[in-house]
Structure formats: C-alpha cells, structure tokens
Length: 344
View (cartoon, rainbow, N blue to C red):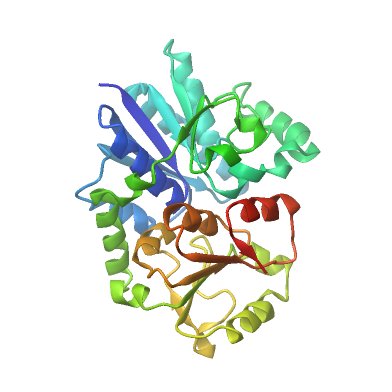
C-alpha cells in the first residue's frame, strides 16, 4: 500500500487533507502538523489524538515558529533531522501541503526524492492566493533576497514558487474552483475538490469535538442571523481604524450577530469587542466546523477572506458579503464578483 503524507499548518489545511485522505482509501495517510508555535501542544493536535474516525494512521507535530537567535538555528537543524527520519521511515509516494513555501514540505520532498524514489507533490487549495496569486512571491524580496538566503542556509533544494502552489516540487493541485485558478497553476495536473467529501462522518465527528471542547452548541450556531469573520490581527495593526469600522458595521446589522476571530491571533479579543456585549465565537473552532451548522438565511461577512470562498463553495445558498478594509485589490474584487460575493 502506498503512503501519503499531509503537511498541515491551518485548520483549513486539516479539513482539506481529511477530505482528500477520505477519498484515497487505498493509501496509508499520515498527518504532520507544521508551523506551530513553540511551546504548548495546540488544542487541535490533542483533539486529533482522540479522534476515533480519523483517516490518518498516525500523526506528528513539528514546531515551526521557533524562538531565539542561534538557538533557533539549532532547533531548525533538529527539526530537519527528525523530519528526515520520518520521511525515510515512511518512504511516501505522495506529499501534500497547503503552502509550498513551507521549508518542511520542500525538505521532505528533497529527502524523499533523494532516495531514488518517485514522489508526487500535491498542493491543497489555500484560499484566495490560489485564485489571485501571491504578489509578494514575484517581488525582489522573495525572488532575490529570500531565495538566495534560503539556498545559502538550507541548500539548493529550496525552490522559490512564482506564487503559492507553483513551485517545482508541486505536480498536482486540488482546488475548489478549477476554472478560476491563477494562470501560473494551470500547468499542473488539476483536481476539483469534492464538496461532498467535506460532509464525511469523520469530519462531522471532528467538528462536533471542536464544538464540545469550546462549549459551543449546534443551536447557538444555527440561531445566528449574521456571522462576521475577522482576519489576522496583523491587519488591525496596519489599520488603526479597523475597530471603529467593525463597530459601525455591527451597528447597522439586525438580529443575532456573532464575531469569530482568526484562529492564529495571540488573544481571544484583539479588538476588545466583548465588553460592548458583542457575542464572540471561540477563535479555536474551525470555520469549516461551523459552516455546515449555519441556517440557510444567515449572512456571512468578512474582508478578503478564504471563509467567503468556502461559504460560496460548500454553502452556495448562504449570502456572503465582503467589506473593504483599506487594502483593496482589483483581482480580489473580480474573483469575488465571479463567485457572486457582494463587496461593500
């Protein structure tokens, strides 16, 4: 039986990996969490360890966001050493990732390919960058500076992708909207992700586990009239008026309104909304776990967000609205227009 390794760094990647692994039952699937903050084990990793219907034969955790100058380099070497041992033991035929800029993925592809074995690299739909491209990937900072530094520090195996998913390590891509992907991805073998696979028994079980551990009920989700999904807190820092704009947005809404922050924020309430009586959903709950439970009349609001793409794909009957955040991009707005997402 062939082996597939799934590198995941976000909850979206985890749900997508689970959906794909559920369809590829002829393979042994191994889950590897990467790019996690050093320290305590993330909640989702603990849940996966308790997940009875998991399609993964084993799971591993590699801390990627490391602390401390020279000590950080030692930790990175240890990460490579441990990753090399895992890949040599598994000898995977396929390696999946949601961001092929991740050094863990590229190093794993390098090790697997060095063992005189053909290994196929797969890109799992990351969200908006899949369709409008990642502009920074073509800039001088990435193409020249970052590319040369990584080749110097890590080795010639590092490949700088023209955009996310376009590196030489990727052979096949798995996307929700194949006809809308960035032109630089069209040379790859393209697979359309199955929306039905996101309704599997294993994903439903994981979703329920996430709700329970965070004290959220199905009724609480179903009762919402509006759900506002917020981006990473780094955007709040770039736009000091962000909080005022969100408050103005909420003031114009009616019914039961809840806000969900980005799961990678440093705290639970970066905009200090809860003291104003605004309902917050735990940021650690995956949006993919919430989405199936929303009623059909709900409105999902977000900025330039992958949550809106997911909503249009998995729940096309749900109204979706994108609000401008001061970093407008014609490509994003054209994509949202093509998908029927209203932009305010």
